[in-house]
Length: 462
Image (cartoon, rainbow, N blue to C red; front, side, top):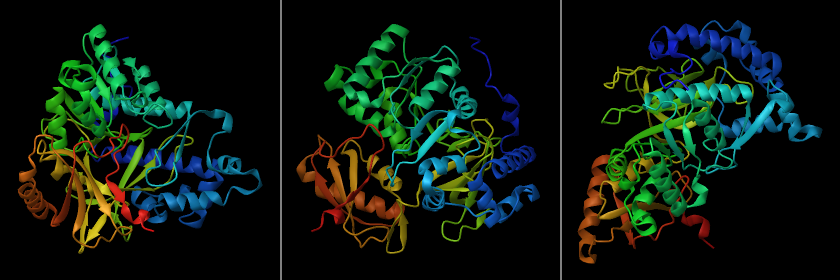
């Protein structure tokens, strides 16, 4: 395979984050909405209840005014109305613009915030996914023939088998070991693969799993992760790769470049190779419309430098993975200024999730912000912590209760001063003073998937 082959739609590259991309978006939006209206009863009913036939859409702004955003619960409630006598087959036949026999692969979300959401892929969806993710690979410096290890969860999830298909289609030499095989097997297989292939150009895993392997590598395989010969790490599925302290720890331990990535199929965001984290470039403006809205009023917020709001996504292509104006729950901050890396595309930083947000005396706090602060105290602490909630969120009666693992070399007599230091840092950065409960190293469960920062003590009350 040609190692210098560009990704398939290189003409879009210079148009990203420019006025010239808007006509492309509008053309694709109009075409896609008309197709949904004609072939999907669910979307036709949604349009008729709101802004009417999409044939009348005059602009992207007109589209945003006509059709309200829908969150996961609203989408699920609407779909249940189509179950009827046919069961969920009724939803299927009324929702998609394809037939059941066109579906070639099914994946799901992890269900960390509720019921897992299924993702159904047709061949067209996999082709779109291959296109958009190839943009990520290309920007990370990867080329066909490079070596790769897949250490995300292989089963069920969008980052599993669908991603494996994309990586093979790109032309990578792939070892799909999968996070389910456990940390020892991931380390051993990566070690052997690296020795055979002369290094590993890239490995996929969550930031929390990457940090856990740092702790366990010596005990499990008798070497540090830096000796595995990994050159690049692509992470996603949770905060971490965009947090300076977490990023620094992982890159230093592995001697590798860490990339942050988010998205699926027609939607893709990925960080660049600049030494300082610049956010994730939006790489799929031609196949997905990104908007920001106020989390409470759901009024549209202009996409301009520094704007912050909840991300609203509308795929502009595909047959099954389509939700018009999907309220993601991700609170994003946008940067439209040119990136110092020189690459095109506006950038976003995910501040947190609306369903993770805590309110402490009127201050909004996200677990990712706490993670950034705690990680900054490694090795005095391990970096692992839990937010203990004694009442259902979002409102939290102060002080915020944190269980924090102490570092293995930190003496008992230093803990009181260390707690004060962390409290002052948190008060300075996020205006919250916590109550810290120290716990022994390795007391908290590690995850090969998404780390759950919240401990719901209120559910254990009798």
